Length: 304
Image (cartoon, rainbow, N blue to C red; front, side):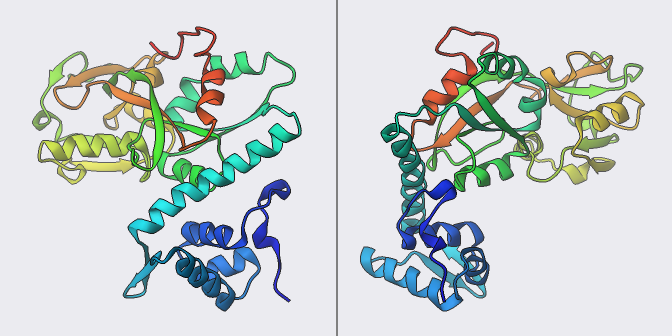
């Protein structure tokens, strides 16, 4: 007997079963995995997607070889369906005269570990407030946002502005770092002068890494042009290795503000980068983010 769980979101929130199946397939991009997650048979998932396509009179998915892809109409429906999912939860709370007091926040490592502490402390100074904070890279946070696991995410990486609503939190200085004793310390350098160095970068999916790579490419360079490349997900480890003279890296100034470490600049690579608050379109998430960040109470600590 097929499960009816496909009609329900977390905490008993109801959603049309075909739309919920559609969103699950958008997340997995695999009919078998979607069926397993929904406790349905694979033919049942296929039938629901075909029924949805017939209702909308458009194709939502297509195969290129063995790989499933989304059509442009699929991307449009996905945005609306995610918004509907979020707004239905809001409607339930409004009918029950409840206010959302537990925020689900995502932040990239730079922001979560070095920027948000004051905002978290201020928000939790009210006994009725609760929050969960997931610190991860930009790619994974956007996935969680798509799955309605977050109210909003604060990221420094690039994202599809056509898919999400967003606003600028602040511009953050980006600097090169080296050992304090390094001859690079305190200098303004060219990219060519750094190519004999070991470059230490964040892991794939990191906004910090992606921005750095995009800047490099705009000048005709890539990571492989450096003497050696090292990928590490921990800021603590990156700073420790750089401080000991193993290599150089590029990080946000807020990450190294309290460290005894050398700093250098590179024209074109060390301009300030944007921190954005990103959230699902057509939702109340902007209001929640502004309340959390103190924008409605005049807190200027985060918007320097």
